[in-house]
Image (cartoon, rainbow, N blue to C red; front, side):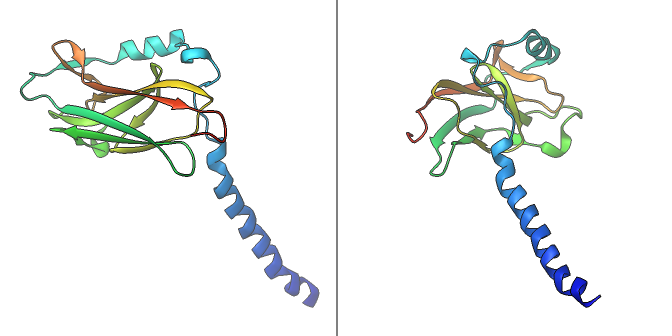
Length: 167
């Protein structure tokens, strides 16, 4: 019994170390759409999903204003910051009735939706080498797109991912 009790703490330490290692390397395995496909070819399923969302046309004088900045992260990937005025992110009311100028945002890379955003900051992992159009648009609680004069309220910018080791 004594030999088992001396080894038991080491088993606990080994288990804890394994969990911590898993937590540290898990982000490297986060899945994104197939980034190897040129311009992220939009599939038919993606197009059908996009058509399911409704739209809310808002008057220009009360419409939210949207801007984005994307900067290279010092460690890896890119940091996206959304600058929205007259708009409130309301993650707790997603899938409920619309309230004017509240909701969430959708993030697209080369016209393919990669994330729903419930706040003004998002980290995009490093991408395969190439140029990417980053677009964010605003959506209401029921996922309808906010429009002004029939155009989505959106902001876009272009980033260039250099080969590994570049910035």
